[in-house]
Length: 578
Image 1 (spheres, rainbow, N blue to C red):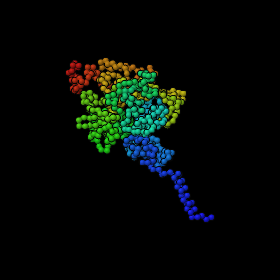
Image 2 (cartoon, rainbow, N blue to C red):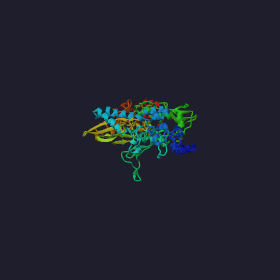
Image 3 (cartoon, one colour):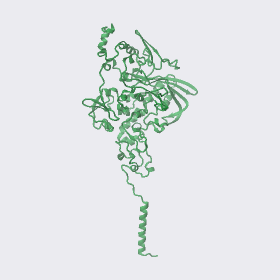
């Protein structure tokens, strides 16, 4: 059949029209890639991590991964990382800018917990009494760490906590995250870290965190009772007494980050064995400050810019130990000003006094904390009970495993902390650290052991100085324990209150006693240079009562030139020596 030309033309035209119609109905327009990635087409109003990381510049995929070119949710979210600040992802997500910080954090004590693990093994395996099988002792120490201590490290998985109010971990987010009750916006980060963030972990062991705010953990009850509930609660099972807070909190409202430096907290790139090796700050770093110029493009300038509440000065203080910038302590021509990081509130700061109580040769061995500690959390006789046939969550293995620990209390005290020679070879406060009395239920047998240790640290309860009498004649302060001290001519006698044997313990000395009057040390320490007073030191300290009885105030003229006063006394030329 032959078709006319017109008919052929009509067929071609109708075909073109049909194809055009189908194209407009079926063909989707090519997507326009959002800047900086396709994720922004859905998440443009989700908010930024912080002002230094605007979402308009960084997008989503640079941190979270996924497919930044995909237009479907399931494709875009393939292999996405929910929390890229966890340490197993952070090199890829943040490493291009923060490689130095990341490497330091991974070696920091907040991540490795090296100090806790090493001391547990040292005390339970090498220095305990009663654990004859050292392999079993090592396993016990590891079990106790895994089930009682290991939840506190910055890369712990937050979802592993049954009670989310106690959750810790998450990598960088553990410290830097701003708590946001809504999930409609992106998590925000800040360098103005609140103290309550630090308290998530720093509320056990030496209890520095809660002590700073004037909270002493009580022995099981939380009075006062208000509105049908116990009011003084640390968490669901722990309570506290309200005691004087540290003067830095009481008078200035300072947070932990106002004193502790970035290097001291996040690490200096070395894997330290003990906390005091990692900590950078000291009292003199602020109260007898070392000021230097702020260098352009330095860490100090970066931190000042991030804070926004800080003026940019010519000089700031630096720590003596690691030369870390204390960027909120600034020097002008006329004075030194300390700025609270949270809001920039300014405080005028004066140098430490050169008055006799600081300048006397006899006090050169004193750490600041020896005199200025108001009280110290001292948990004597911590009773750790292990049930081999029980089960408990293991924070290292991330599963419930065989073996269960129960912690009981015995003799909690806060008043008159012991004094001794600390890790820095200076006189400082000591408390149990940790003093464990253990009971093991295994194979239908009962095994008992004890690892009695004392440790020195700054309790973070700084206040007005203790009196001379507090240190020189209080037996608890001398490390003898609580009781009565009697001086008969040249004979010194001590009558302790606590009787370990009558309390059912196979320990021949009071558990709050560090040393005897003869200078015999009852309890171990975990530092090579740390120890209790020896006999000569005890006698020298106690003998000062002869002066203190009359000359109780440092305003007394004998302290203005103590060496001369002492010489006159030994020569019999003073009224009290005649």
